Length: 157
Image (tube, rainbow, N blue to C red; front, side, top):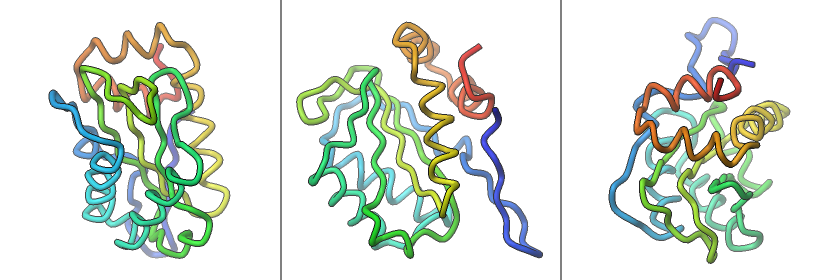
């Protein structure tokens, strides 16, 4: 399943994931720094208003956004939904795992989804990250193109 491209009437479509929003990182950072970094990417890409970043922090503080298989998915609390301009994601890939509330994470995927688009995007991400061996294989590629392809094809094959 390809990531959808959402648009409003008479607007040029904005892709859910842009290649420039996939970054491989060689140095570690904290959970808060990762959320800030991805939030700024999403802001500059036109997906969110700045206050959505605060919502991502609040969500992670109230309930960790670590989901397993080396993945954390920061996203805003419900009351910050109005700060989403258009659905989008941004991805950080850490060669060396960072600790996210004590759990090893190689992939941090910030998510802003309007309405039911949120669940469609989450479903796609769940498919990609369902097999730990394939997740580690994707990490070892070190390739933005491979990560982009995985997200846009709904899997690693």
